[in-house]
Image 1 (tube, one colour):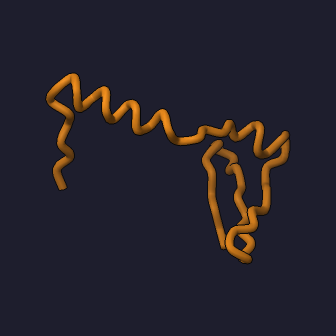
Image 2 (cartoon, one colour):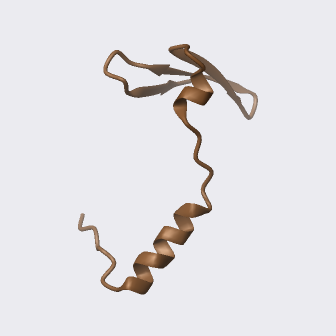
Length: 60
């Protein structure tokens, strides 16, 4: 699979603006010092954990 890079300034600016519309949350705000949280989505519970290596794992 080949990924195409934007070849013009206009495409780069449009892509950046699209990302600006996405809400960004800091993990420290979500976890508040804990290593694990539970997220309820559409009636189901999901567990999100911070690993020892600092990565995130989401399980249903």
